Every structure is written in C-alpha cells, then in structure tokens.
Amino acid sequence: MAQTFAEDVLDGRRALVTGGGTGLGRAMTEVFLDHGAEVAIASRKRYAQAADELGIPGFELDVRDEEACQRVVDEASDALGGLDLLVNNAAGNFLSPAANLSENGWRSVVDIVLDGTFRMSQAAYPELAEAEEANVVNIVATYAWTAAPMVSHSGAAKSGVLNLTRSLAVEWGDDDVRVNAIAPGPVVTEKAAEHLGYADPEVQEKLATKIPMDRLGEPEEIADAALFLSSPAARWVTGECLVVDGGQWLQGNLFDALMSE
Ligand code: HXC
Ligand code: NAP
Image 1 (spheres, helix red, strand yellow):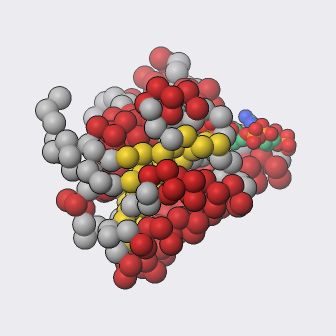
Image 2: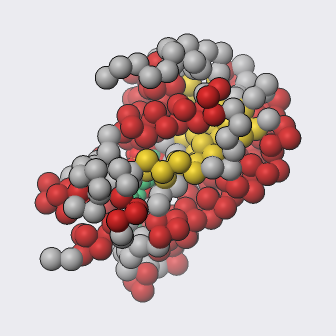
C-alpha cells in the first residue's frame, strides 16, 4: 500500500502505548516507530517480548494500580526524555449476560478500561502539558453509544471513556494537550479471538454480514487512524471520536449477528 504519511511525520515525538505489546496496541506502536516516534510500551505481561523484538523500552504495568501508573509514566518519560503522546489502549473484556456477571467480573473490566484510562491520563498530564503539543488517544468501541448485549461492563466503561475524552479535551485544550478517541470495528486479535470468539471463520462470516464494507478490519487500519490523530494534520482536532469500522455501527448491532441463527 502507498505510504500515506511522510515517514518522519512523528520525528521527535515520544509516545507511551498501554497494551502496546499485542494486537491493536502493537500495530499502533509499530506505525509510530515507522514514522519517526520513540515509543515505550507497558502492560501486565505481554509487553516484554514485543519490547525486545522492537528494541524499545517496556514496563510492567497493571492500570488498576494507581502507583504503578505514575511509576510507569515517570520511567517512560525518563527513558524517552518526556512524553508527547499517550495511547490508552489497555483493556479487558469477555462475553457475559449482565445478569450473570459477578461483582468482581464487572469491577475488573471497569477498573481496567475506565479507571485505568483516567489514572494513566492524569499521571501523564504534567509531562503532556510540558510538551510543545501533545495528544492522547483513547481506544473505545462503537457500542459505547449503540449499546450491545453480552458486554454491558465493557460498554459502560467505554462510554465513560468517551465522555472522559471530551471532558479532558475541554480542560486541557489550553495546554495544547489534545484528547481524542478511536472506535475500532471488529478486528481479529489474539484476545478478541479468545474472549469474543473472533477466530472462528463462521463468527467472522456472521460479523461481516453486519459490515457494509463486507469484511473485518486489519490492525494497521486502526493504527493509521492513531497516526493521523497524533500527527500535525489533526492539530485542531480534539474531543473527537474517529470510527474505523467499515460502516459497521450504522448497520445495527454487531453482537446480534453472533446470537442469531
Ligand atoms: C464470566 C468472567 C469471565 C467470563 C472472567 N470473569 N472471565 N465471568 N465470564 N468469560 C470474571 C472472573 O470469574 C472473576 O470474577 C473476574 O471476572 C476477574 O477475573 P480474573 O481472571 O481473576 O481477572 P484478571 O486475571 O485480572 O483478568 C481480567 C479480565 C481478563 C478482564 C477478566 O479477561 C483479561 O485479562 N483480559 C485482557 C485481555 C482482553 O480481554 N482483551 C480483549 C480486548 S478486545 P469472580 O467473581 O469469579 O472473582 C475488545 C473488543 C471490543 O475489547 C469489542 C469489539 C466490537
Ligand atoms: P488485546 O491484544 O487483548 O489488547 C489488550 C492489551 O491490554 C494487551 O496488550 C494486554 O496486555 C493489556 N492489558 C490488559 N489488561 C491490562 C491491565 N490491567 N493493565 C495493563 N495492561 C493491560 O486486544 P485488542 O483487540 O488488541 O484490543 C486493544 C484495544 O482495542 C482495547 O481497548 C479494545 O477494547 C479495543 N477494541 C478492540 C476491538 C477488536 O475487535 N479487536 C474492537 C473495538 C475495540 P497484558 O495481557 O500483558 O496485560
């Protein structure tokens, strides 16, 4: 595919990507690196191998731990010499009817997705405000506004992240810290396969029937959106949510496709 952005478009930019070792986070990490940024990644476990392979700093982090969030922001800023870009990509999810969710199941997902995004954003804010121009990208999902069965915990959390995106955009605009979101449509990643069943060709076929563009997405297609939002091309874009889903959400509920025969 033709190169869309100049390969030095992120030269001198310093990024921290949570969950940057796998799936969409890894794709965003690689596209940032390919366009001149320095990148650090952080997660509970699956950061180490990727950091090794890419030759970048990697940090252990559970975003449910407030102190760890601050420590990792400090360590990443030290390693990179500051921070201009933060991607809040870490998430937990599984399919369960709301009526069956345990308190701990609900709390785990909300704690990672919503509270974790807040903790990381708040911890990074002083570094981001110090930068010449900064951008936060939060990863949500279109069911943040459409609603969906089986993911009430994730939907409520992503909905909160969307609102947080806009609130922080308003509070931090004056510091030249932009805050935006991306809502990816279905993309086959290892954990989406494990927790949501996306690896099954039959499931993929059912999902594709709900997508006007007739196919699932690729991780690079989400990463390019993060690149755009983090680039000077988006310098007056803040508080926005960019949907990258082949038109899926316009055509009805994704998970209905999985549950109908
Ligand atoms: C019901 C479940 C469950 C399941 C876990 N729980 N899986 N309940 N059905 N399938 C419950 C457990 O029983 C427990 O409650 C509580 O959740 C916490 O589980 P633990 O395994 O102890 O938690 P932990 O090891 O911290 O793992 C967190 C997690 C896990 C969120 C539960 O799924 C995780 O680590 N996920 C990270 C990766 C991930 O999910 N990626 C997918 C992103 S894809 P009790 O009461 O028993 O103690 C994505 C796609 C969006 O978001 C949709 C596309 C449109
Ligand atoms: P993924 O590979 O499972 O990504 C989740 C990442 O978050 C992993 O790297 C994981 O690493 C990290 N993580 C999980 N819990 C964490 C915690 N408590 N603290 C720190 N890091 C944690 O799945 P993905 O599909 O790429 O998802 C990436 C993002 O896209 C998520 O926000 C997801 O909700 C969103 N999304 C995905 C899709 C899709 O179809 N794939 C669609 C819409 C939205 P560790 O296990 O090492 O912690």
